[in-house]
Amino acid sequence: MRPVAYATGWAAAAALGAAILVPVSGRVVGRRRPLRLAFVRWHAWLGGGAALVGTGHSIASITSARLAPGPEAGLWVASAAAALLVIEALVGVTLRDPALVDRQARRYHVAIVYALVLLVAVHVALNGAAP
Image (cartoon, rainbow, N blue to C red; front, side, top):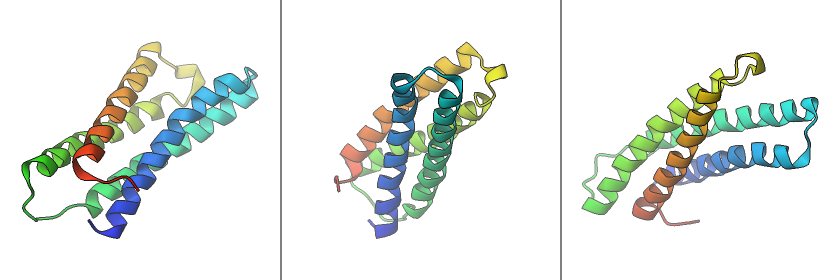
């Protein structure tokens, strides 16, 4: 694997992990509205960054080499994760305006995150060694 692909993959995973932890820590730290909005802003930036870096990782990882069945399956899982990451970012953008927050969209947002974490874990297990 090329170093750029390796680095962008772990950077996307780190940004996704941080984006997941920010709203959780925001709920623990405080209930005041300005503080909550700051955490939402960080969550949005980190989530958008994860989507961009994840897309970059997908592009940097494209190869025409023949792969064994396990790594091949891992790339299909990664492709699904990449598509889901972009969908997650688009759903997240709809939730940025507090006046337009839809409970169903928020549920989709959380459900997609669970699916993303699962797909990324399977992709790492099939394709990549931990750093």
